[in-house]
Length: 317
Image 1: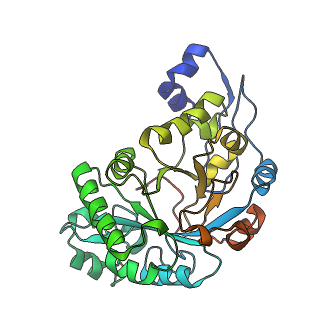
Image 2: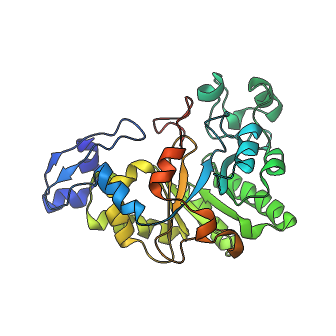
């Protein structure tokens, strides 16, 4: 990990900084630390709780209620819709081989269903058969999800034209339903987010990251660079894996008022941190009053559980 970071970060080499301790995080909730000359140590678990506890958090359901049910299934989404613990629901959408918009996270069915089939290479009817009818279409998911604010993630398959076609399809449906003010479109793809903002400038967007240099190295310029990335893509929400909470102090210190911080994990964990008055859920104002929607960070940690199917690595992010 040390060699990789130094190789990919020429500014560190040029400045002559030497890492004293470089530890690799192996689990989603691990809080191992990295210390470097010229930088403050990463936040401890106690410091994380202290800093996040200062602000109310709005909890959501990542891939639906993915602890009680298989992630992104109709059962998981329906349960999240019915559970008052979750104030919004996130699910993933991508194309099958026959250009059906399907709700599934990974590129293949291996982790969830033990099958080697790749989503983009397999027609929907075959995906449905291989999953024992557990992979829903976008339309089926919306039928049970509508009623709460939704975070729809565009799972880019590396084809920008397909991404744009999928975005247009989803946006047309959202507009037909008249629920534009209750939807956030997110993606790990900066180009997908740029397209949404260019074509649909009023649509709230979020850019997703797993781990960055700032996750391990608490240098100001790295944290500021993270916010610069979402500024470049015009994303409104910075959506980070919970391992980035090691850098929580700087993430909160450098956060612009027009950007909102969201944390997620590989299970159902997802929550929005409300540091500024502008940090609010993307739904209609009456649905986002802090007194109605938020809990403390400590309350959130005790209410989330881990799923046995939750991913613990970067495969098919």
